[in-house]
Amino acid sequence: MRTRLVVGSGSIARAVIGSLCERPGRLLATGSDEREDSLRENGAVEVLAVDPTVHSQLAEVEADVETVVVASDNPAENLVVARAARRAFPSAFLLVYAGATVQDDRIGQRAERLAELRSVADRVVDPGTVLDSYLEDRIETGGISIHEFRRVLEDVDGTLAVVMHDNPDPDAIASAIALVQIAERLGCSAEACYYGSINHQQNRAFVNLLDLDLTSLEPDADLDVYGGFALVDHARPGVNDGLPGDTAVDIVIDHHPPRGPVTAAFTDLRSDVGATSTLLVDYLRRFDVDIEETVATALLFGIRVDTNEFSREVSVADFEAGAFLLREADLGMLERIEDPSMSSDTFETIADAIHNRDRHGTVLLSGVGELRDRDTLAQAADRLLAMDGVTTTLVYGINAGTIYISARSRGTDLDLGETLRAAFGQIGSAGGHADMAGAQLDLGVMETISDDDDLEAIVEEIVTDRFLDAMEVYPSQLPSESYGEGTELPDDAAPVSPQLGSGRRNGVAENRPEDTVDRYRVDDTDGETETRSTDGSDTVGDDNDGT
Image (cartoon, rainbow, N blue to C red):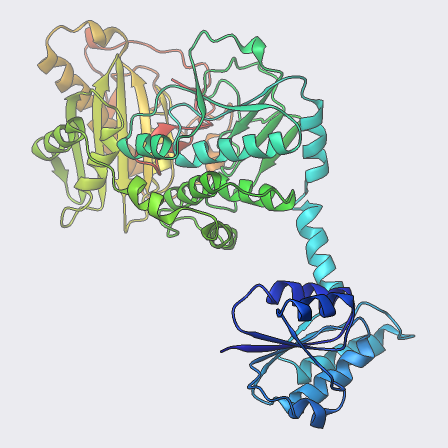
């Protein structure tokens, strides 16, 4: 049986005893006050009549003590007791509270005492250091003020609409429901809202199994019923969400670097973490919100998906958030979410992608024709990447007048996000991460072509030519600033003509027949795109033009 000894009296010692008495094992304590007497009466702790400053008396304790906690409020006394405890129990783990009373005339004396304690104890808890850490976590981190966050929430007159990006992925969904819980904890009514649909079978299982309360907004939804708006996992209204572009936004929380102006009463844009869910864990902890099991499970899944099981663009904060959530999350439910049944549409799309594949060295491209479920493209791109010798895959299909593109890569210097921006950003919306990205292009007048085979052949030529040409020009990672607002691509870069059918083959400009193309006016041509493809849906995210 594990035996622990707590030495000291006062508030700190009482708190330690109160915590340890609920754990299995034998608990001993020295001294006596009302708290300890009460515990002794209940049999929770055995109070010893010994002088803890005398090692010989401590050594007479008839128990194999594994842990000793020295926790009085007097720093000098703690040092004496720590030395006695070390002599009495040389193999025990010794934790010492440095004491909060500053009795030394000079700072150097306190530092000297701390050094002495550290030479004796296995772990020293210094209240000054703990307070500094607490204040840093609770008040200001990276310029983000929770007081300002609270003030903005208090100013919301009515229900706060927490809006995810279109066709939301697990990170966006989890972040939204977490922000709803925080807002309601602070007295602000809130709803988790999204435009588009949730089609990916894993995402549907995620929402259904956790019974998440989400509001699906129609394009013509009456937004006047909301008193404020918050954006999670994207940063600009009207850019990959159904909100009007001029919507006044109260809160923005996102982990993607902004590629355009972000305007809100409160913004938290931290690109040094792998998931927006990680940022919401930070807020839950700062506000001491008792996290619900459902929210903890959702946030853990969101982090795992967006960081590809803690292997992609992951940070220390992501690991710490994951460890924190493990205590509250339903891991059995996570297993059910991560292994949902696969729809027949997904199987058919994967089969078509395999059958129609066209290989160019280590690059594999495939068109699957008409799509019934756009989210199946990402799963097909993932499956093709498993083929021997393939480092990059791109799968595309057509649905409701739009060409959808999903791309994956591994073990290569290619930055897919920048490559797809170069290839398709001027004629549609495109972008994403270095190893997974997506794009969307309107068919325009090509939609009038009645012969499906002719249409698919034209789409194949456009997609293939533009992607391969962009790979030649952008073989490795490019700085995001290359496509800032109002910036044009260099003349020797990938084709930048707004004419969907124009492209290059081996660097030579090539024009398609005029009757197969259309000219497009892209309202938001800042090249600012981001793909939410970690969930396999390749939803173009916060920084695109929303097409």
